[in-house]
Each structure stands twice: as C-alpha cells, then as structure tokens.
Length: 152
Image (cartoon, rainbow, N blue to C red):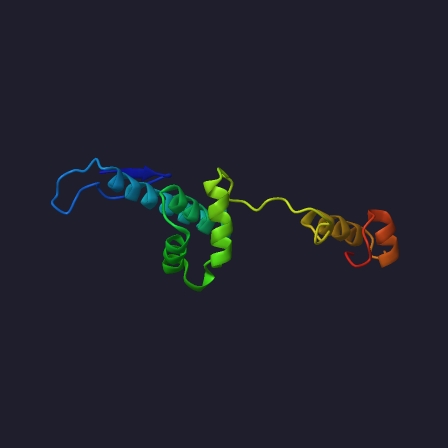
C-alpha cells in the first residue's frame, strides 16, 4: 500500500489490477502519480498556497506531459472544475507553453504600471499616522507619504 505523509498518512490505494495482482505497468504508475498530484494540489489549495488557476494549470501540465491532446485535456479539466474551468483558448496557450518546456504554472510578470498602491503596508502607514494624530488632512498625508489622494 502506498501512502502520502503530509503530517499524517493518506491511503492512496494499492497499485493493483482488478484481478488483484500487483502491477508495475507505466499506466498504473501514471494513474498513481496523477492521484498524488491531485491530492497534493487540493491540500495546497485549501491551505491557500495554490490558487484555483494554478491548480488547473498544474493538472493541465500533467495531462500535456502524459501525452493528452488539448481537446481531451480541456474535457477532463471541465469534468473536474465545471464552470470555473479555464477557456479552451487558455488551455491551448498553456498546453503550448508546457510542450515547449515551460515548467512554471504562475502568470508571467506583466509590464507597465501596477494596478494599485493600496497595499497592506500603505494602509498601515496611513492608519498609524492618523491614529497618532487625527488632525491630518488628505493633502498633508499625501505630502508625508508620497501617495496620491486617490490612494489615501
């Protein structure tokens, strides 16, 4: 019996055929690997380590590396993730990346200005200033912190 130990044991089942004999075929090992990948990703997703997009991409990467075509991979993802499945176009784009050797399931950094400066650090700075002295105006907070009035 194979188990996965992540603080506690999870029974992943035995690699056996319906006849009951042990199997050493690559298809059984592939299925076992997929089962482990799905369990690990599910645990990371629940812990907030992996996003839903990353989970789909990791599953797609596995399907592509195991020789599954784009249409079949999308159907399998759709069966698991339902309406929240990425589009067929995105499956095609990511499958191409994985076939070309890309291993990263994260988005590539995007050029240009960041969407917002409203970060936890900036909120903390403004909150600290206002809590220490409530007589700040928006303009003086902008001058003090270097943030725009839209962020403050």
